[in-house]
Length: 138
Image (cartoon, rainbow, N blue to C red; front, side):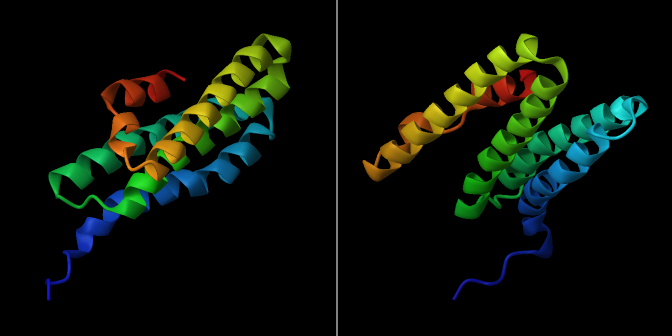
């Protein structure tokens, strides 16, 4: 039987979960006083940094997991979707059209990944460095 993993191996997944938990807080802050936007931006930036650190630490500590591989892109998509919807609500069509394009692409890529996994070739469309850069830019 394999020995239990060190306690810190759960940190990458905890960071992804924190990213998900930050979404309602970000949404609530966004809907508050307009002067909170710097706070919202700061919290959003910090949560985006966790996207880098969860993957980096998981690879560094050899703590990758199927749950982490699932959770990380889901947390990314939830963060981006929430931000885009909030911004589209605030700024209207100027943001709504690009937001819709981004969201449609995200759903299409997720569906493709799921279908490829069913075909047994998930690695063909796995998340790479370019995808991480795209998420950061969004």
